[in-house]
Length: 503
Image (cartoon, rainbow, N blue to C red; front, top):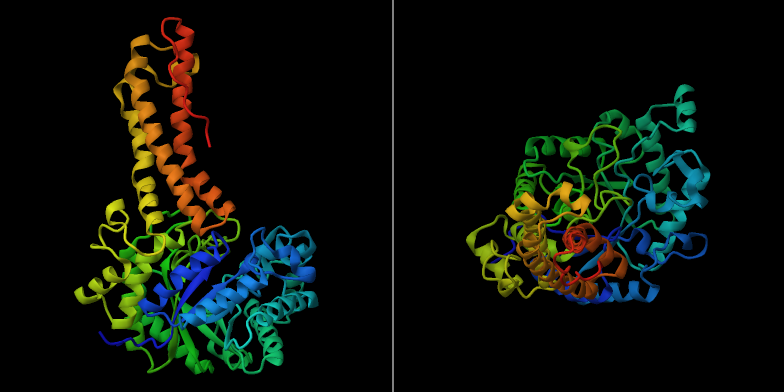
């Protein structure tokens, strides 16, 4: 099967703002990325980068060390994967601006999402961040400077004064900061090519863009994660950008993290359709206009362009720095395989499907994750199988007992539970089933925790279990505690075995 893709560069995005993988797990998945047709990695480090000096407070507890960054670059090179670092320089600056030491650089004081473009210290800050990242990425050919979803721009006090003085528009304010950041980076690294997300540019007039001085400095990445993206609209946007003087353009799709902030399982069909639409865009637009495509994998979800209300906080993976986790990387790997191979071969044919199943070590894509005996052999396939069990059956089985079991609903509802009243014979009907269900899910939870600990750091493991597993276990434990207290209070039947304490 030959490479018939219109995208000659295919980058897999690693979003490290939530559930960053251990380096040992990356060593397992990089060979898979290469086998599936990836050429490069776009690594959005955020607080996983080992910043030094005044920036050291940006590090998370489990931030990679400099030697681990070197190991990641080494592993990538071994698997013929170029590394493109991403440093946010305008919007999505929560991981920086949440700290009191940098809070004065917020565009709007209460919101740590957007950097003020008026402070000289703002440019110095992003310059220092970029400098440290590039120092650990010698030889990098590209740097992504983010700049998406710059919410609340123009609403800060300094911006309002600037606008009231008639010094320009909000678009001009945005372009001025982009030009300043790009010029600063290019002055230090003249050969470096700069990518940025395109959403802040889309609605700007052509003449403003062309006259801004920005087009020669950066390469817009047109992103759209919807399954029914407007192909014609994207072609028109590409033509607009080319007229404005942008020499190179890129596309960005999504293989996970784009369908819900609390999504646990990746809807493969949605992402496949998104990639098939991008293939149509590449074939319909100006020849060779798109340098490549970035397959984003937000570690929680990202908003599609037309699902975002103006001035509303972004829906992004970790829809932003403060959002909950969505699909974990191992869970999204079947989707990544389908999407990458569809890009490589220009579509999703039965032969492509067979290649994907072979790479993943599964007999059927449809059954991936649904049964442990056919979980696959790809790295983290056991995580997918266990997450699938939890996501599809934990809540429904607990609801079935609490709301659907006729003995619980009929003889031990909320009124009786609060008052510790139960007919003694009902304990014999309810308790064994509740204990059995708790034991079953407790075993799954323990197995999943061990599997997650191999791939992720303790805080991410704890967060995922707390959001997705422990609430169900606690509901069962509370039922059994209430049942035991009610049985004891009746004085006619011993309480029976105590449920295990909650995790």
